[in-house]
Amino acid sequence: MASPAPVYAAGARPLRAWQQQALERYEETSPKDFLVTATPGAGKTTFALTLAARLLARREVARVVVVAPTDHLRLQWADAADRAGIVLDPGLTNAVGPVRAGTQGYVTTYAQVAGKPMLHAARATAVKSLVILDEIHHAGDGLSWGEAVADAFGMVARRLCLTGTPFRTKVDERIPFVRYEEDTFEADDGERGVGLASRADYTYGYKEALADSVVRPVVFAAYTGTARWRNSAGEVVAASLTEAGTKSVEMAAWRTVLDPKGQWVPHVIAAMDERITHLREHGMPDAAGLVLASDQDDARAYARIVRRITGKAPELILSDDPKASKKIERFATGSARIAVCVRMVSEGVDIPRAAVLAWMTSYRTPLFFAQAVGRVVRARDPQESATVFLPAVRPLLALAASMEEQRNHVMPPPRKTEEDLEELDLPPREPREGALSQHEMLEADARFAHVLHGGTAHTGAGNRPTALAAEDEEFVGIPGLLTPEQTAELLSKRDDELRLRIAASHKHDDGDVMLVEEHPDEHETNGWRDAAELRREINRLVSRVSAKTSTPHAVVHTQLRQSVPGPPSASASVDVLRMRRERLRTML
Image (cartoon, rainbow, N blue to C red; front, top):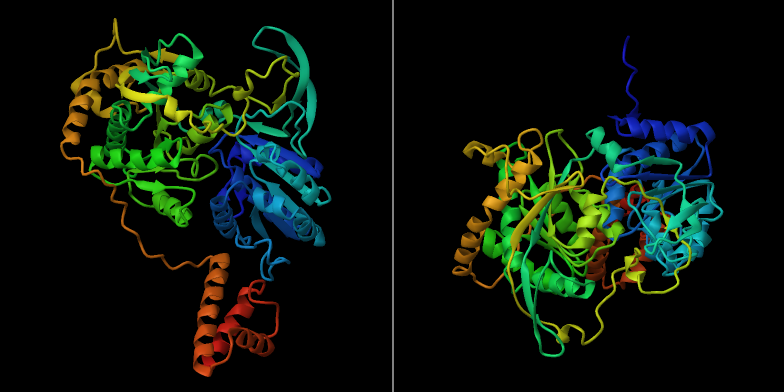
């Protein structure tokens, strides 16, 4: 019997089975609201743009509006839309006004929608529109974003909500356009109560994606260590990450090992670098790693450590760097081994060659953990695997062990106390001013603890039924070649070698970070990029005409609009911009 013909996404790429099933379910009822929960790396963007292309082709909608969490994701969505044959403008600000001619919609952020919800409501209701709300849980962040999203898009024709991670918010804080049903929850103290849980219209979890080879299997390499610090009373405290008696001691030890001045961070970065080398030598020549820091100061310090350990500067990606988006693009398509970042790549950013993650942060919510791990699980080949290096602390080990669990957005019954609020998926709390000065890091070392795979820990110690041959060591962690027990054995065996390498690296520490060479921008052909470049060129030409004729810039712009009628350049289409550019050239 012949196999059914493949269904193609917009852009002529075959749809994955889950994407096809989700489209079929949508088209059975053509609902106003549709929520898709799909694990990071599964292809939510492709699904959404394929649906958008179909609705546009059938004239069921005439405009597409995408709301994304970050500015960089605006560019990523616009590029993906271009490949799907849809022109979406990622540069439309709240100051511009109407949607630019020559586009089929635009990409904005939740922050921009919160700035002027009525402007976005006017844009989305001027014509029948499909609004795609990427990572919809951001509309429940409690920062007035939820109300703004509801006001802006409450009256649109169609809404598609996307999310890829487990998330929780405060009690009674609903996410707009998400359907909730009553459910029974059990609290930590064993008491049961009735709350609300979200219900997706289509769900595709990590477990299903792993079975379909859509995502990579993840091996978690946990590293313990002994930390010593001086507390606010002047007492010297020493504790192991894996043997801390209380939560407060565990958190203090965790914070101490993450200090760049200790030995835990260099040790784990060296292990990460070796893992990248092995991947590159055996089947994944462009393998790369991400180092996730808690703040920008730590990120800069970790970048210096990477430079010292590996001999090569990492890509340092910080949110306040105006070149952050270009650096992410360059890292995604380039050959650099490691990028050090804070939160810029934790959600939605597509870097398929990233297969190794070093967790150097104290963030520990299920939402953030799933999003960050999701950056290294996007599969390109069935033989690829992902490795996450992390501190061997209970909160992270519990999250790693539950990677395959399905979760909804839950609003449990009200708590009797507020002591467990940190377990909710709220933005990580900043330390109080002066709090850090009460904690003085003294020293911290690192030791391999165990490998966590499929929810089971493997230490690589004790009775080992299968010894490692020398040639096996070249294939650490590749599925089908080494078992989790053998992987643990190898990481444990190499611990002493890493200490020698780190000690040698200190002799050559130049104390400086040499950032990777800046590359000139390559020629861009995307529609929205063409428009942005044309506007910049027009402004340069106006300046030249102004200087040549001693005419004010504003007068030149007015004359230009009279010669080539149309809206202001900020709102004009590519065709109008090109005619204005040619007109300006004749004036020189």
